[in-house]
Amino acid sequence: MESEKVGEEETVIVGDYVEIMKTEGKSKGMKSKFSKLFWHGGSVYDAWFSCASNQVAQVLLTLPYSFSQLGMLSGILLQLFYGLLGSWTAYIISILYVEYRTRKEREKVDFRNHVIQWFEVLDGLLGKHWRNVGLAFNCTFLLFGSVIQLIACASNIYYINDNLDKRTWTYIFGACCATTVFIPSFHNYRIWSFLGLLMTTYTAWYLTIASLLHGQVEGVQHTGPTKLVLYFTGATNILYTFGGHAVT
Image 1 (cartoon, rainbow, N blue to C red):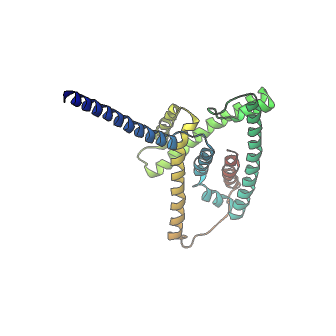
Image 2: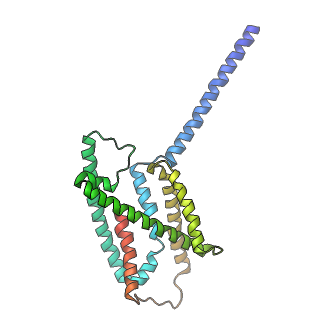
Image 3: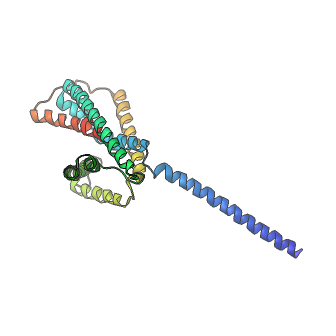
């Protein structure tokens, strides 16, 4: 009997151990699936999510104001012109990326854990001189672009909560954005793309539904640009939207 009990105890212990291992395997499996869904990117879908969330959202709210600066006719014409020009540029750049990657893969270079940058393409196709020019341009553009984005965020939040001045809000957003340096790789930005796309979709539908429910303000008058500088400000914003963002 004792041996049977011991045997039963061993069996139970082994059974529990196996059950625990299965449970741990399931939890790890769920954790792995969750991590893969929201954390590990680098696919074609991530490129689409990144463009849709990071690029379109930045200027979604400013387009009506740009149209008011340009006038409806100029706004539509420039939007179509910049969109076509940006799409053509994106097509040409895509060909150059593919050409660079094809050449490097023939040399047995592995790109699975590497995101190709534009200055690398210039280096591979045109040489180090153009690589340095492209790198300097990218760094300058990103430096000023990041400052502009911080100021824009601070201005937006100031309209929601004016208990703090805009400069203080800029410091707060700067400190929050600085924590992104702890994200291991560009592939791990997938969760931010999801959130950005979700908020962009919500904002777009909110504006659409609100405009349908409330309609136009009674007695509103539509006017074109009153100053030349305003006209070019609106044109620059649409260029930034449908020109530079199409390249991205």
